[in-house]
Image (cartoon, rainbow, N blue to C red; front, side, top):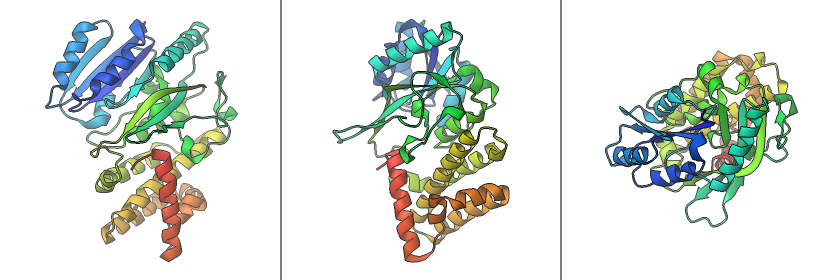
Length: 338
């Protein structure tokens, strides 16, 4: 039995995919690595096959027509055999010591019949030219080193949103909750981590710095100028998240509040980049997003508008722009983009 499946979506990743693969290989035979070559035109396939030949019991390579990051994750999940599932992007990597600790804890939890639906660990922003690396942990937000439920969670700071980098989901849960990421769309990691949350009954948090999140390539999807150019995709993802759940049907009030807060942050990110796009069309898209939320779920619209980020995104004039700048600075801290 494989304890953990790690899916590595690759598109023209030949220059850096080796680090991701090598660090995950340190987990040994209890790990399954699925490398998804998403229509690459460089040596990605060749490198992946070389790894597969060397580690046939650990690595599988799947080649597919280009469908984007989301379709690559879909393929990885559909073929996953591990009890747990994690996505590691091809330009990121994991800390080997932390991975060994996580694997040991997961193994013990499964052996005790007490394994959680969602396992969480810290991630680190590996930003180019920044010596002091920013660590995102969940201290004061989540109980440590124990299985807990949503009713046990505490206060999340703005920087403590649960992102794809910090999550290890139970594979069976992801498959049963019907998650399907859209093709040819960026920012799908938000759906990946958000949509399954109401299906999660138990969680576990380990305070180790597992995931290393690389930031620095100019073509990276979280680069500010790239995000502005791709605002339509950000808007699409935000609308899909709005549609994914009736948040007021969620029994746990703490989970409901957390998901409202996350969606509020997504509305802020989308609004900020509509504004920073700098055109009347961008402002129109921002207004359209808020109108969409209001028409889809008036109660949710009112709740998000009542929060400080929601209010700031809809203020007119000079004061409104200052509040929007404040919201932008908050989102920069959350995502760590340039």
